[in-house]
Amino acid sequence: MQWRMRALCAAAVLLTACVPAVPYGQEPAINSPAFAVRIPAPGRPGYLQTIKFVDDGMRYVDRDSQFFISPAGEMCFRVRPNYPEIIYDAAYRNWCIYPQVVDRVEAATNDVTGINEVRLWCLRSYPQCAHAPDSGWVSNNISAGTVDYLRQRAAVEDLISIMGGNVRFAQPPSGYLSNTGEISPPR
Image (cartoon, rainbow, N blue to C red; front, side):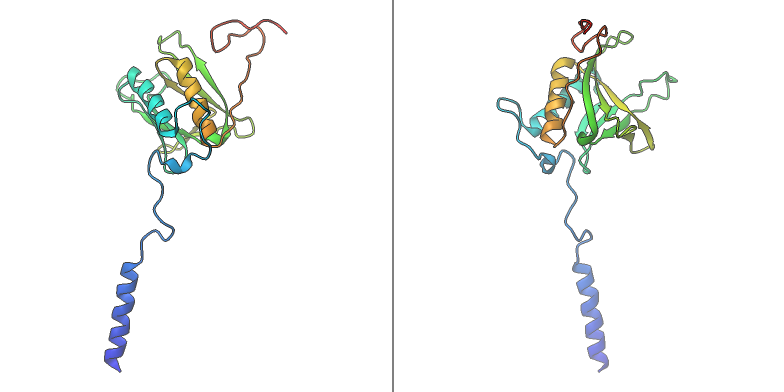
């Protein structure tokens, strides 16, 4: 009787050792194609090619910056802080945003640094939707320096669409600079 109890205990221990740590499978990897829920528009690059295009544009300006899709399905930008800083405290930070809460994507010029940017804005119903996972900071937008910022904006808009978001193609209010640098006429 005692040997049966030992055999049952040994079998129970072996069975628990064989159970996977994650009962529902592994979580998606960085840049996982699992987050591509729509096909790209005809003639446009696919999901992984668009991610690489945005990442390459950012790295051309700053080799230590990065763009990737997190395992949770967020678009993440690894960028330097864009606020006045101490020269030795210029740590890069990951800023992430879900594509479904992006209101608009803006191609912006930066007259101070001379580096053009792509800026993603949160929906008004989801203010402070951009966050830095490592620090807990939140914001209502993300800015990333990039080369060929107009094409980068279009690529980010395409990626948002592929990932299930609906970006708004907003016209600036009259009298303000548009994304192309032209002043829109009064309505």
